[in-house]
Length: 336
Image (cartoon, rainbow, N blue to C red; front, side, top):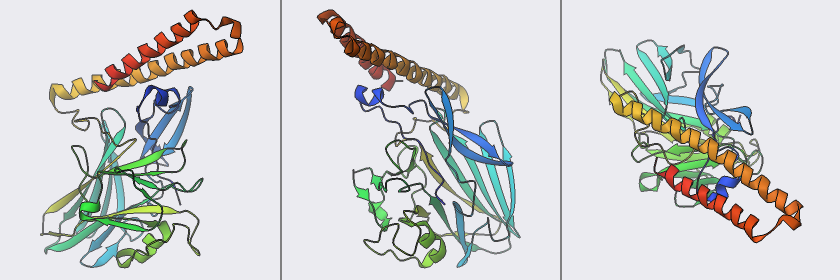
């Protein structure tokens, strides 16, 4: 059941960059059997690999709506599904009787984050009380059982419920050190709607126990008889009373890392948006070019190690100068 995931890429230092094989990762939309799904495209060594950010199976990852104390999962409870797309966005629309639930997904200007706006529309003749929850099936643990990471450096490896001030700026799940990681952004300039609570547990337990879910402290994600290391995150938002003829919105932001591009979702608004597009393109080009340059430096180092007679003060100084230049470029990159 573990599918949604993202690639995390950070430029902490020049050393990190030397080994960042997925530095050119970006987000795009992919259509699978006619269904538009936000997808990560990771480019490494000229090869194109595709890793789904959003699950193809909406019964695995998707929204659960508690409407007047009754749980409804649009993907399996008889809601009619529709979809559409714009120049840079994708839409999934669910309808049932007098209700509609619309998801609009848009990718940021630097193609490293996606914002999903979910809107519940009440076309009935009376007020309804709606509490949405987003269940996200992560790939955590299938290979190594790495835990979730919080912004304060804390790791989570067993069932946990976070609420109020416990909810961090971001939460990251990761399969292993090589695979993509999924980062939820909860607050900040480009963060989503703050959930009422964030629950981390085994996917099947979260799916089957619904609103009645009770966290068992210390229980791992693979405690029998449930599937091994099948972790998931549920974002439960505060309930809203929605009068007849009105609607409410909730926003979820996911990304390749915890540092969104400032104003990255406003690229269609005026000339500033176009400037942001050009900045993002320059940033992307710079990343790719620096990786090529670093690869050339590594080749030069390997050649020197294979031919010790060529190791001189001058050749070592040349390597150091080239690395210094890359460090200067890193500083310039951070100011883009």
